[in-house]
Length: 164
Length: 151
Image 1 (cartoon, rainbow over the protein chains, first blue to last red):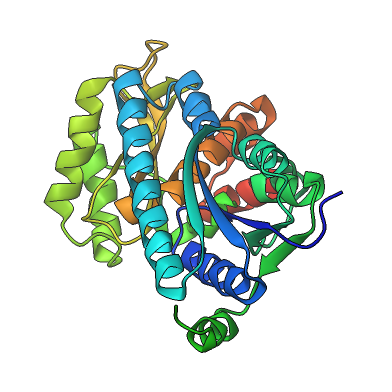
Image 2 (image 1 turned 180 degrees about the horizontal axis):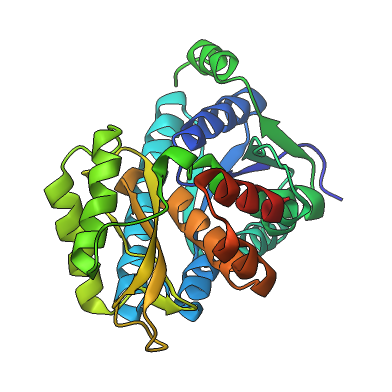
């Protein structure tokens, strides 16, 4: 059994709130002196579902996939800069597939000690819970999970965290 | 993600005046523009029509979902229009379309937009939803149908 904490994984979506989640993860990695791995997953399942239902055509789905990849690469680059500023060892990973499967497989593969993720959105129906990838990650994650809330507190913590 | 977070009774036209595909898209886009949700109406319509050229968004069961990402919209926008006489959308099943969902997104909100499209797709795959939805007489009824089936 490994002793102590070594790796924190942060799961990033494409929203503005993701950067708040990332800031918390960077601050936490700095405070705990551990490596931070950020994961961005291009949601291929949703693209395939929209193709199957004929809402999308092939070429369109490929353009969305490319755009999501670019968006993910941009977000990972921003997090890499944050980590560099704070002197945190960092690795960004851009993946494609079913979001929950990809995140959970990577958490296992990296033997992550902690997963940081954004707040779950309010669920008003069982259907929503069933289809929510964040919910699946939270329930099936093999390591402890930190869910980031309160952007103002996160911002303050991030600013207080010592630079490199 | 709830569809009714984005579709409101104010963004529904229960009796479209338009008789054609482009005019229907224009009528719905104009409503969204008047609500301040589209910044550049012509650019939005241009992108929607360009997407239609790749293949019809008439997905069958008398429903069409013209859509596109464009900088011309604020966040994710949805409008609904019902045509009593039916509109030729070159649908995959060859039938005319009576129900049109016009959707757009700013590229920054792609993930939300894709999930919303997937939510709509799931609802439309449900025969009971389609029956309830087709029989909704007013915008209030329509929103109530969505809320009932999203529970």
